[in-house]
Length: 326
Length: 300
Image (cartoon, rainbow over all chains, first blue to last red; front, top):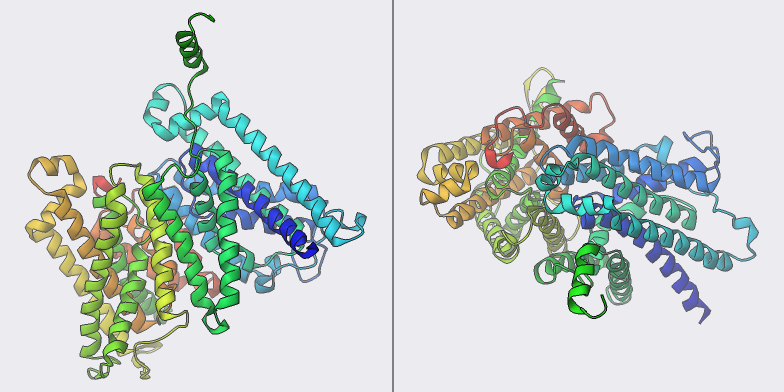
């Protein structure tokens, strides 16, 4: 029983971290219509950035600044935002899909740096023995995990609240206007490139934040946690839940990560070890099918975007429907 | 140095073949098809499948490691790749085309790429394999330059094929129709060109070239399910460098990308070779986003 409860805590921490990641993507794709094909890169930059900033000093490594965790977390997010700035500056003035191609490129590059730049990233072994924030104050690791879950939930809640506020603000309305028709938005005096740039950078920073939180949880980074399949998983989570809706994004994480975990457990039980790589392919095919079938048959996802109506129109409707009350 | 140039041109010729199909898709169908490079993987493995299924004997031509069985297998593989491309278009892209924004098409192709790659992995497993186990001695052409007969064949074959595609687009009515749609689809429609037919032929040309490129890659390097995943970035870089929609540009772009990738090893550790096309792409996008040569208006 305790085992299941502990596993549930573990599962929920990962789900919450992915939910933050999906909310970052939702800001880019769901609200602004920017295609990020390298989600895993921004997540990895945040994770490695945090790890290098908080890590203990080691003679063979660059970095190991031993900063407090909160600073490391912010630094990681800032590095991810900076990477977002570079690709966005190169591509946002151009054809829309160039951003997709460039983000795909940055994902490949980050993977190579993680694997090959031993002095910075520890190479294939990664960076181990990273301090977990305030670990010493807790009596057992289990208690610590429960508290970490609470902290991560609080941060996810803050990100959710911030994004909900942002997308309902005038700025958020411009995002959608640009997504639907950039020319019309420009004719109203808005600068689509600048606003796309802001949304993309903010989204990248949120992804980096998720990466840093993951490092704080597991206490090490290695390239194994940042495989290309993660980008597809995050995308599947977003569109299953319904892009353009943060509640949907969170729901999508639960559904897709649940599906992935259950199918993974089944495969490890049933399939002989010699066929594990094929079994992994089977899991990836499920993710691919989820993406393509959702796009074809339920493009709005489970929840979908709420149609936003100006409060003036809404007030007018209310007045029309209940003439006596006005 | 000389060796690096020769190796780069060889990889470049294979990239060029893939990039032709990609640049046509981007120019005519007007979306960046992330699944295009996976058609190379698919084609390469279909040829392997035909060879093993029928247990065809390896009857090598002269100094080459392969003979007519591989040529037959390549033809069959090209057919199967075109079939896959048309099937994907029928099931995924056509229902979405016109109904959703074109970025959603890009996203769909992203999902399709994952599917194709993993179907290949499921069918053939993840180990690297070869078409033939015969060893080939390299020939010393010049001082400090050794090439294998296979490589010379592959290079010439790729260039001849690229030339044939160029003639097809310039001289035949079908090629003219494809170029017309690439420049202006509505005007082409008014002139009586059937869009459906042009779309179909874009897939036929792009799919078969991708299959051949995949086989040539398998002959000179090896077969792995990640071929497409690793070649996608070079293909995009070549297509954009050459001006999207421009076939000659794609070929020159492919050769240049191959060269730069190969020469970069002299300067930076070879572990980063895969990132070179991305750096080239970034430079192109910052400095000259329209590419070296004029693209078609559909590409812009």
